[in-house]
Length: 521
Image 1 (cartoon, helix red, strand yellow):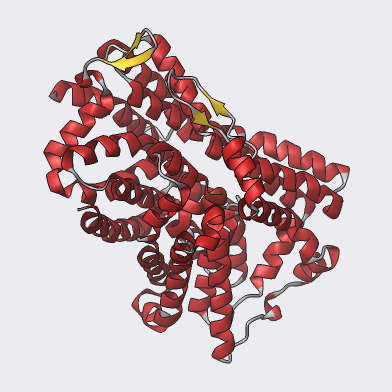
Image 2 (cartoon, rainbow, N blue to C red):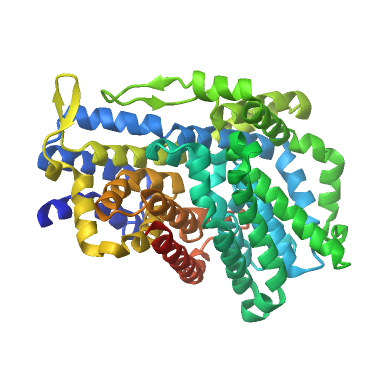
């Protein structure tokens, strides 16, 4: 058993070594890790090559809600950037909440950050220049956008990680959202205090106590309400959009009731004023407005929801006896593409802008999309290791030949009843490793299902705690921090940020892990 456990962990150890010591990119490390995982499954766990290759293909298809969303959202953002739409939106956000520093931090990083990431945008690319323009240091401008949206990271990309969780656990979307909702008000509020600590330590934490609690409870509370109110049940993938909007509105209302300015145009430069004249806010927002309207219709109009989600599930079978419901007409990536194309009629971009959009898209999209897919492939190879090809399908003859079974038994023996507590830190590790909450879910779900069954604890809570930890890893992800630093020409400050952010992410994960321990029992 010990040897099998070591062999199972070797691919993960190799990926960690490549990323941390050799500074390899996630896609490169993932590819090498996939090859090593497949070879280990073949040589030491008696997995036929066909099983390994089919499992890899199934993993890539299962990654579509993430990998294809990455492709289409990068296309949309590149297009909005090239046409000036993103710049116009940034000017608008820049005018918010300067009358209260704590409110401004919550409004921009929690509210707008959650809204942006839910629409497929990238807060670490959009928000740092705005924060610098508002007078924040480079250090703060890089750190805050990387942590502000983390609580509701499960609802990023129009709920893509939630869809992955639902599919892999076999749990309905609404039930899945309810499981996560138990953590979110607490985690959102803690993230708010973490941001105040980064900016002004204890002084700002005291001064911003009230708006921080309001923002955290609103952000997480909106997720709770949406998951439990029957009217919203079919539109649960829009949770991030709704929660982010509610948080922004509550912060603006707090300013209004306190007699402080809601909009401060004194922050705008001559260049900002020129940007306003060149494009109206409605035109700039058109890709997202079209996307929101399309998502509302598809999810809240029962005939369309039934058609796109249930009847047009478009199942694919790569592994005998297993069906992967792609739901390509319902998944967000299709409608991100549709909204981008339709917005051309409103924005009316020049030929140069379109060519620039495509050039940036081709340069930016392949590697992160492939990175998302390859970690799913690794997970599926591990899940199906030891399977033998028999008449009528695949069958696991010996559980000791399955990598996930080996890990589950070892973890159950090592952690015992404390296993739910450990799950949050497994997610933090997985999120740091893969750079994605969805990939973290894919890597650990079957492992958690098996181990939780052995220990008789709630597997859904355990898996959700891992996902929460995976989301919190965003603030210690070198790739995300480098992305943020590059937008303000501050490359090199990431290592300093990681030191502070690591302590915050570990502390918040501790609270989530304690919650998981009590909720899963």
